[in-house]
Amino acid sequence: MTDPIYLDYNATAPVRPAVAEAMVEALSLTGNPSSVHQWGRQAHRRLEDAREQVAALVGASPAMVVFTSGGTEANNLAIQGAGPSRILVSAVEHDSVLAVAENAETIPVDENGLVELDELKRLLEESDEPTLVCVMYANNETGVIQPVEEIVKIAHDHGALVHCDAVQASGKTEIYMRRVGVDLMSLSSHKLGGPQGVGALVVSDTVTISPMIRGGGQERGSRAGTENLPGIVGFGLAAEISMTASAEIANAQALRDDLESRLIEAAPDAVIYGNEVSRLPNTSCIAMPGIEAETQVMALDLAGVMVSAGSACSSGKVRASHVLTAMGADDDAAGSAIRVSFGWQSVAEDVDAFLSAWLDLYQRHRSSNNAQATAA
Image (cartoon, rainbow, N blue to C red; front, side):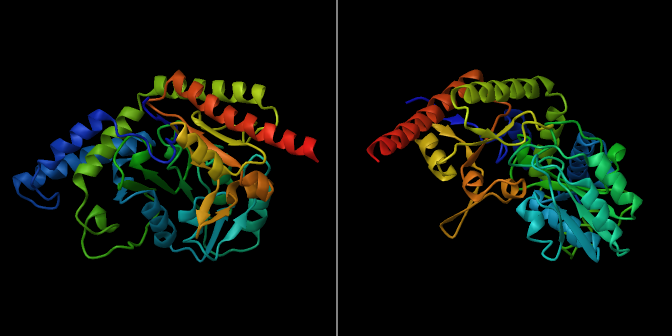
C-alpha cells in the first residue's frame, strides 16, 4: 500500500523533526519559568528565547508577544481583552472571531473575497464609539490576502483599533506588524510545523488588554497560568525555521500553480476561488460543480489523498461555506468546494495523485450525468 498523500497543511502542518527534538529536550527542564532559582531561570530563558523567535516572525518586539493555547484563544483574547463597545468584522472571518463577536457588524467583501474598503469607511463614519476592526490577514479557505495596510489606515483615521488573525498567513508570506500598523495579531504554532495547542497574541505597545484567564502574573499579567514551555519552545523554533523557508514556499506555489493549470485544462467548468487576486502561495479552493464537498473529500481519502472540505458539517448537515457565500457563490457552488493546501513535505507526485483521484471522480460524475440525459 502506498503512503497517503497529505494536502491539508492549512488545517495543521506535520511537526518538523527539529521542532520535535527541541520539545523533547525542553521536557527535561524541571524549573517553572516563574521560579527564581537556577532551574527556574533556565526555563525562563528558554521561554524568552522563543518569545524573541515568534516576535521576529512578524516584525514585532518580544515584549508584544503573549503566549496562548492557540489561535482561537488569541482571537478571543484580542476581542474580549480590547474591550471595545463596537466591533466590525469582515464577512469571511474564522469562526473563532465570528462566534465571540456575536453583536458585531459585518464588513462585506467582493467576489474575490476582499474587504469592501468603501463600506468599511461608511461603517466607521456612522459612529464615534470605540471600535475594533477585525480582518484576517489571509483567508484559511481561499488563501486570499487582504489589503491590510489600507484597512489599518482607514481604521486609524477613524480612531479604531485593528485586530488581524494572521494564523494562516504567518510563515507563508512576509508580515511586518509594525510597518502595517496592526494593533493586535493572532498566531498559531501548528500551521508552521510546530506543535498543536500553542499560539500567541501579539499586542502593540500602544494597546492595553484585559486578561480572560486570571490568577497569576504570567505573560506580564495578560494571561495567567504556567506557560506550556515545551510547546512554546517548539513554536519558537518553528517560527525561526519558517523565516528561512523561502525555497519551501516557492515549491508550494509551483505545486499549487501546476495543480490548478492542469485541473482547469481537464475540467474547464471547475471553479478556483480567489485566483484573480493575491493569495497565499500554498492554497487552492476548488469547486467541482454538482458534487458535494464531503463526497469529494471521502472519495479522495479512499484514494489515499487527504484534503479538507470548503464547507463545514454541523449536526450531520452540510452547511455551505460562509466564506464563499460572502463572495457571492450560491449554496450549491459553495457546498461543492474543497481546499487543497501544500507545505514543507509536499512533492510533485502529490499533485499527480490528487489530479488522478479528483479527475476520476469528475469523469464518473460527467458520465453519469450524460447517461441520465440520454435516458431522459
